Image (tube, rainbow, N blue to C red; front, side, top):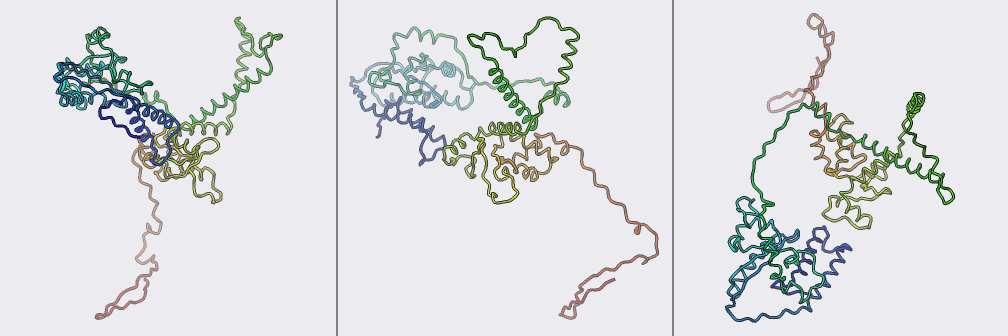
Length: 476
């Protein structure tokens, strides 16, 4: 199936296919792989729309030469066809004038963007080079007076930059244009409104007054994030959720309101608005003092760690989806060189090669995979950095990889001293180590050769003429 459309008459349908093809390639899929289900449905729908183009018949224009008339150009822009929808229409108008032999008395360009109109009516030198060059190009082919505003509902160019129309046939407004004479009064009111300069970019200098503060007052307000407090706080939240669920379930079983039993739940105590007596206050104070916090077992700690890991692994959503579906990771993925698996908790792990080793923990053979840019990974690096007294990078890396595999770990650790409050690395210069005392024998006053030792030296080489001989060892 092929489409021959040099005039762009089928653009509302064909542009959708081009944008769809761009989205498929941006997803990282290879040429020999199957596209996703959603993209496949959109592709089949687009193919059906293209097949309907065969039923459209465009009548041939036959007119006498030197016919006078107006040339109207409608322009529009969207996120998927920004440059083509705004400036390509201006070039198309200039190319039409060179090809046809009609006497065009007036050129009118229509757009539904007031921002574009304000840009055209402004000085191009007040914008950045990208916008300024295109505004200068518009000034070469058009004039400011030839640009008009049109409502979005009447802009036919909107059909090519947005979703394809549902019923695209010969009666569609794409082939006949909008009904402008009936809406001329409304559009004139829109063109006479006060011009705005939304989006205009001007160079300016901003002066900011900063109050100088000491580091002590600043550190009191800044929250200090640590790995252990976050893990324990998350575990406490999980523990509270379980307690609330159990209490709600028990209360629901004990008391159930029916048609014959209309009394309220006895577990809810009646709130008295009377003032408490001193004895009641003392009793309540003693009850509050007898309360003890619940202990936090290891199960909640593990659940909290799993929850934090799942939150940190959301950046690997495509990889996780491919592994669950039994597919391979795409070539553009950062984890394409590794063998991975998903455990029973849904956490992404790295497959190791030391399964046969004895006395090796499961996490060492299957470490958790984390991105070096995630906040959890930064807290882990900070935790191990402080745990091992701000040691060298090799020590910290070795300890981290006992449980986690963090991408770009070495480069992230090189930047960690600027992010971690290293009290040792940023302290005063280290003092030289104290030397030991000299032995007493070296400090006593004796006659020469009173203390002596035996030492061997050699071998000695003796030269006799051109011959070299080696003698034995000697001692003194």
